[in-house]
Image 1: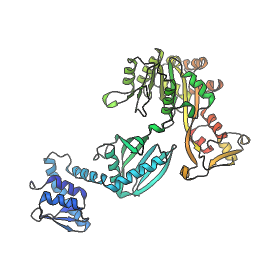
Image 2: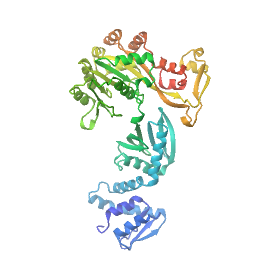
Image 3: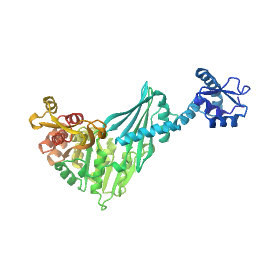
Image 4: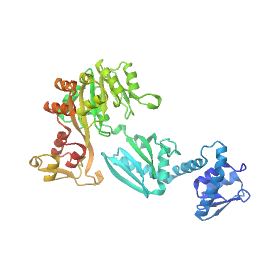
Length: 484
């Protein structure tokens, strides 16, 4: 076998539609089920000699030859130091697939369709009979395309190639990034792959710096929340927490807050995972757990940089929480996020991490819970009567909401009836009485009741206000908030 050109043979067999006859090289014929293009034929003749002949054969006959040569070449590849000889063949095939012009155009087209819809994520989801492509628009999944199952390998390979991931690794999850240029827009896409039964599920998270809203006044925050929040973030020290599920706009709120208080007279440093958007005049650190730079390590380093304002992307563990609290108690203004259902839940989450109640009550000065609710499309909005069932579902008096506004669906909103999102907010200001409840070990319900007694408006109440103004719908309120 040493007289064979192994690199060329691996490329031939990876295409799966061309293979030498079993008597090769004494019989210099290559059998094909689909004729290779002229460049490939020229390369083969240049490498193996001008006597090479190409002959058409049934697809199953070529498949048998491919199987024969793969089994025969595998020991040679292993002896040459190639890990997993068959894998080498498949990798070459995948690279060829990913470089095909039709696949490149298809992936680019899908990305641009998602971007035209202002999608935040693109999902490639292999199924048994097709490749399902969906995107998340205003927090809800929207179908883009159902592609033939035959393109699953090609599409996933193309995306992985763009993200500089290991194109041959299909058994383990991978993470990468794509820099994508669409007209004058420069987009950053975070890529995540996950092995599945029918192929790799791939999700692209779209980050568009030009689309981020960093103006507190334009986030949908009502004045009775915006005013006290704007005042509290001017404090010289303490912890301000923003809570909510993934995709609820926490990072946008924090960026808008930093932009508002960043006057240049103070030093602001952030530690994030990842740095989603770059803020002028602010030092931003990207977490890298692979080299030991997690939130806790980054926060310890930040404190030694003489900051006035610190943003920690997320408090995930006791160590990070302890350093954040210590920083707040030693004269720093600290911002961070937690994944909790409401504002009061943030206090008990810190307690569950093992933080003493007296430290929480001494350091936390405010908690903002938030959600994102879809807005009725302004191009196809129409008024209709609220039903008794809808009023009962929301727990409200039907006479208070005699009419609703809904979108009937149009091209501008992809026939969803919604276009864009707005924030819902719940601001818990830690008063002396609430500190007393926290210090006494009070649970979230006690803290919540005291906050409401002091005038806190819940997420559901803010949502109902937006319903009354014709901004959103009952379905959206039920989807993103719980009963007050």
